[in-house]
Image 1 (tube, helix red, strand yellow):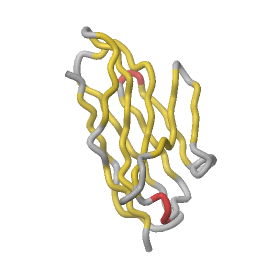
Image 2 (cartoon, one colour):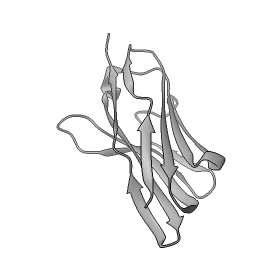
Image 3 (cartoon, rainbow, N blue to C red):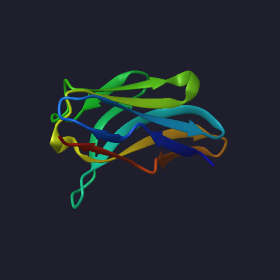
Length: 119
């Protein structure tokens, strides 16, 4: 019943910034944990950033200091602020949440949004 809608992807120049959004809809009691993943063409999907519990964050070494994950609990929305973007950041980005609903806690995935960093 829960759906995730991603937005904010696009084409940016190296050194530019972009903010991705992931809005959850449905009968949600709470969001237990969230994460952003990315998958370049022909490569494995990898974890970029995550939040567990109320505020504990984790980042991949490749994005640490450049990316910031955050939550707006009132809107059930997760964000990924990406600064100082590099061509190697080019990938399809996916959000993932573990949400508690009437039917229990489940993992849900967004449909993905393309981020392309190129001059």
